[in-house]
Every structure is written in C-alpha cells, then in structure tokens.
Image (tube, rainbow, N blue to C red; front, side):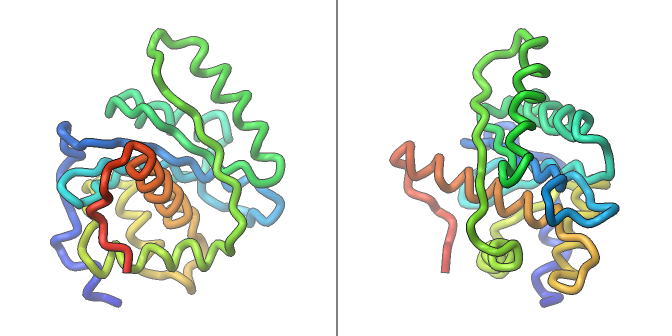
Length: 188
C-alpha cells in the first residue's frame, strides 16, 4: 500500500551506533535468473527497533557485485555477510575468499542462505516491517531503486533488491536470536 512509502521511510545515513550490521547479496545468477536482473547488496543496521537500510542495486558482473558487498561491509564495520547459495551460486564463496584474502581486515563471517520458500513468499514477509514503519532507507540511488521495486511488487519486472533485503533482515534476526538478544522488531 502507498501509505508504507511516506516520506518518513527516508534517512540520510546508517547510524554509527547501530547495534548490529549485516550485508546480504542476491547475485541473481541462478537457474531462474531473468536476463537483465540486478545484483543487489543490501546493508541493514539495527538501532532501537528500526532497521536502517542502504543498498547497491545494479547490473554488473558477479565480481563487481562481491566488491559492492564488501565495500558496504568495510565502510560500515559489518561483521556478517550473507549471499544466496542456491544452485551454482555457492561458487561465489570462492570469490569472497579471494577478495577477502587481499585485505588486512579480519572478522567478517560469511554466511550462505539457501532458499526453500518461494521468492514471492519471502518478499511478502517484509510486509510487517513496512506496515510497522520499522525500515528506514538511506537516500541513495540503490535505495531509491530498492524502494521502487518494493512499491511495484509483485508486478515489477525485477525484485532482486527486495529479495536481498529479506535475506539481510533474516540474517539480522537470526543473529539477534543467537546472541540471546530479544528482537524488538514486530513480526506480526
């Protein structure tokens, strides 16, 4: 609904004091990928029950998509990065290993996410976050495209940004539960 996308969803930056920051990559290179799909790297930082989101959503080779993902991680001090591993995408792990080997930065944990639910169902799980106004999007070209894809879902030609956002939120919630933190997101 249009009311999900009022001006209050926009922010200028990810708060430095966010308690948890994660990045997820949807490489859009699987067997069901459409020609012209976007590669989406989505950063989520959680602070006071709000998920702050930044995004790099563009059409690019997979190596550049991994670079974009790591750029978000390094810039924001992210310790957890995830990527979709369905199909041959598990080979992306080797690209991450290669790119991380060249950096002195240590402490990034790479997670794989294998989807078992439909993409449409996964993206629909974002509804409570939007309805409860628990998402803030950085005013960036990537977030503008992400929000456009959210607004047009399920009729949009592309939904790679929303798919990566769902992965990032799922990883953040999983880590919050693992750390015995109580999620202050409303999951109704």
